[in-house]
Length: 326
Image (cartoon, rainbow, N blue to C red; front, side):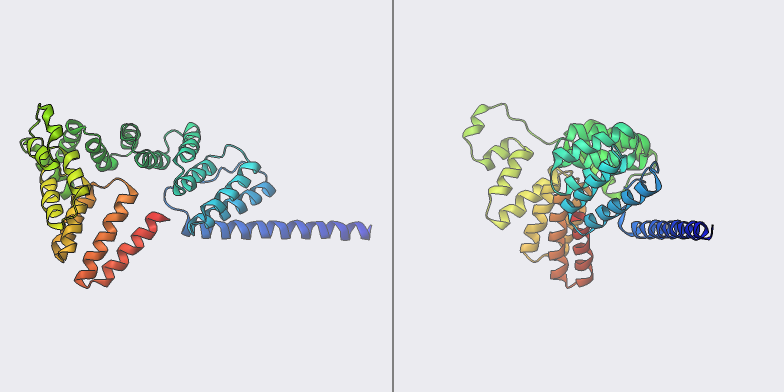
């Protein structure tokens, strides 16, 4: 009898210790997750037994931790363990997609986010992530369709939709949306300036002559104010003055194209005109939709701040670059 009581007492103590550890681990997991889980993360479904739940959270927590320090392959390994414990978890699918995206594997990133969206089709964070994948693939038509869903859920997301319309040469749609936003008094200063530029009379001259193919790029551009020709002139030129000249023309003719602002900023930095370069780059970054292009802008802005002796702003931009790459 006494032996049985002792045995029961030990079992209770063991269960209490397990419960205590479970509570402590869960509390630690929650507190740490606040620091490493970004706003676009989604909660884990609570549909597991206590023991499996602890095991699942351990691997999921480790995946988030590895991702936060750039160990994306290790993060994926831990997510695979999560997937073995409970299959078809939306949060796991989302994290799989984010890690594959950071590894530049857009095929698998797209596969996993689509699986997640089947289970939660109106999750705005997952839809925004899908837009990023489509932009990286330069599939602007598809990114527009997804961004329109995002806007339907949150009208504050329209700025990116304007940029996507312009990137896809859907100027009429961009202007219509800008007009709506202006009526609602939610148009940012950069978009107001863009709207004014888009409403200016179109000065492009489209030449019907096929003999333009035999002309130099500059002669072709003179006859046909094409963005593609302008871009080729800038990309092939080794003369900084020429790059500055044509990128300045590009800013005037194609005010929604980040490339022309970036090249003008680079040319001005080369001439040590850091203030003007910085203003140009700040104007152009408003139209950037791709992470790698945003990084290029920040790198060039760092050069401007360095030339101006502003180390504080240099550090801020360096941190932004780290955040984009993480």
